Length: 149
Image (cartoon, rainbow, N blue to C red; front, side, top):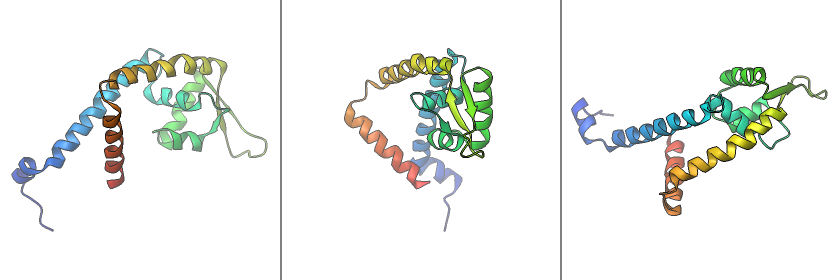
């Protein structure tokens, strides 16, 4: 396999511009999202866990990890901090003492009921200029890019 020279790679490869646009879009959303969730005194990862647990009877750490974008190593610390804030509890089911179920407290559920709809509404306002066909095309393309890696 022959690799292009540095100057050829920079000037003739549209994938670099595509990746740059993708990363910039992610960074813009990430910055916006972090600012939004900070009003609830949460990090984006903490908000993600609260949003995932909302309207559920609770989940195992493994299930939370699968449904969020948080790695297992980071998830334990995130749940620790949510527990210290009084937003979640951990319970060990008697039938499986190796498992831990994480549940929102009443305060955590209240935060979910206030913050999650507001966040969804705000995201909808930002994406409203895109018509449904553009949204669908974007989802298809992003899923395709994900599958390539």
